[in-house]
Length: 49
Image 1 (tube, helix red, strand yellow):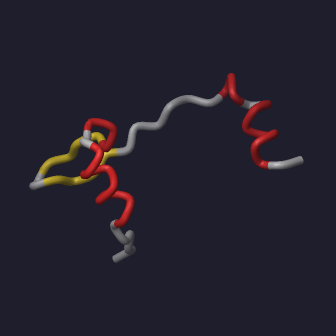
Image 2 (image 1 turned 30 degrees about the vertical axis):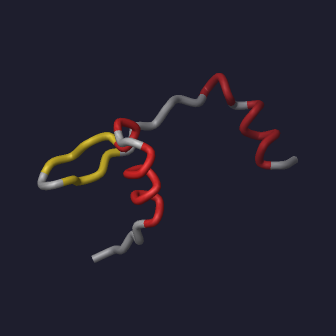
Image 3 (image 1 turned 60 degrees about the horizontal axis):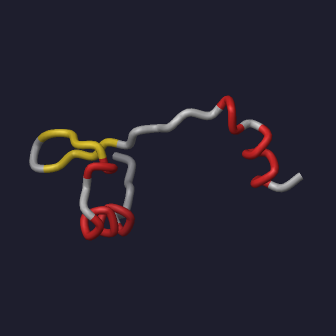
């Protein structure tokens, strides 16, 4: 069974996840960014301290 098929079967149990990022000292949801800022956010490297 492919990943897409599994997601379709469980679609009624899924819920939207809001992703926040720290911008200029406070947290903002990524979905409120404009197109350019969303692209910049995707290019960022994540690291663990």
